[in-house]
Picture 1 (cartoon, rainbow, N blue to C red):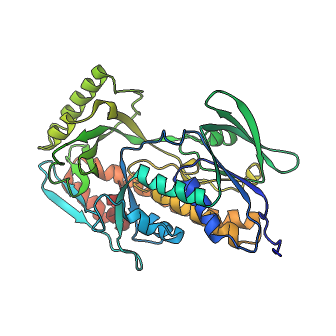
Picture 2 (picture 1 turned 120 degrees about the vertical axis):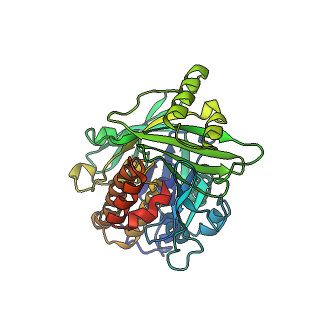
Picture 3 (picture 1 turned 90 degrees about the horizontal axis):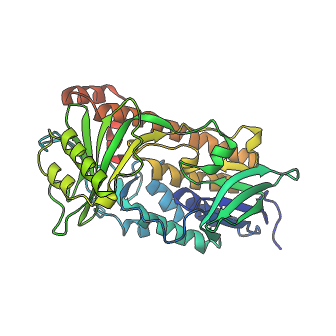
Length: 413
């Protein structure tokens, strides 16, 4: 006979968001749950249709500290499966910095933490999400795709009511005993429950796209990834997505964010390409070739946005926890969003399983997640200043004056 001694036993949990953080939480809770307890009912509400999320870019997973995403994946039992999808294999490529003429200034390959097989890897975001969704579904979570959650409120009986709307505009309400919000940086539920806690501009704008090379990516980025530094306030990031595709992003610090909504139209893409070539005119080949080879539909203009983390000590958030980007959004310069999401999911599930009450579990999660995210945002500010410095020599001087650790994590952009 099962022992009824857990505060979530037999309860209903709604997870808003079926991305990295939400699925990591579901998979971790199932893995850590005591088999003597009755499982809670877990429902995942994801705003996108199941097959609609195609992320044609790669992300970094770190394995050089306990806070790395590779550590969380090993804890989940998914490390081997994830490594099969590594873009550069176990050697993981090297993060490099080059000057405007592609002369190598620095190369890093982080040391693995503990007995991990690698200190970092690159993976297509879509591959990682597929792995996590499959594992969450094995955990008997019920997924509802194409369902957007617009608001949530606590009822008189203590339960949480979530308002939803499907793709046809049909509205409904769901109730649960515990709500995990993992619906990303543009979280609708955060906007409803914390209306003044919005994204903030981090001071840099990126323009870029995805370049296709049917006969292979040009050197030196066919086996490496990193930053091209100008020493003139402009930098460009490159990373392979597969053997034929590379994503690039030219960046410049600006006082205000760029508000262009779409650049995929032929005339707008031509303007964007001209702008990129003009801003990056100091960069030698293959910079121009990469920009010229960009697929128009992939072109983008994006401002670096971020949001500071918060703790769940507000009584209005009782029985509700925000994880991943819904809690603490980081810009691309942090290079750490997926790692934070994976660790958030694991840490929340672990504390829910091992703490004696919901309050103590959330407090323990906050003590880990808040500090981790705050450090990532602080590091991203240093990276933005470094990458856009107006002198390469001064950049390395400033890097040497910094703590040292963030410098090694520059590979995560």
